[in-house]
Image (tube, rainbow, N blue to C red; front, side, top):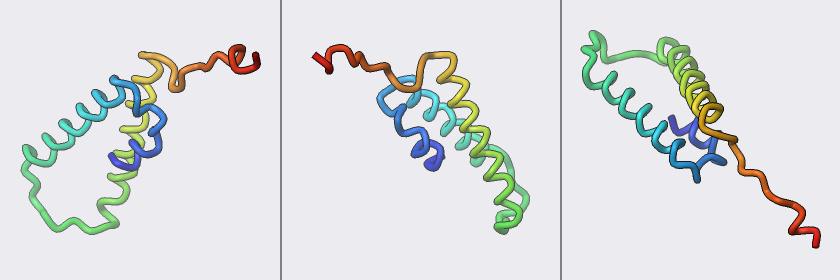
Length: 83
């Protein structure tokens, strides 16, 4: 989660970005706490592919919300700066 937030840090001033991150954190917490995991000793070769898929899913959710709710970076009016 932290990796994707840092990669999309230019969106930090958007309320929808933090609402989306908060909802994703709640979903992750629910999965960790409510799903009974049979084995608590998972190794890196097992966790790494799942982690990569998770990062990609978080990235695509944030991209989708950004596309639905507005541009990633606000446009700046350059005409005032050139006067």
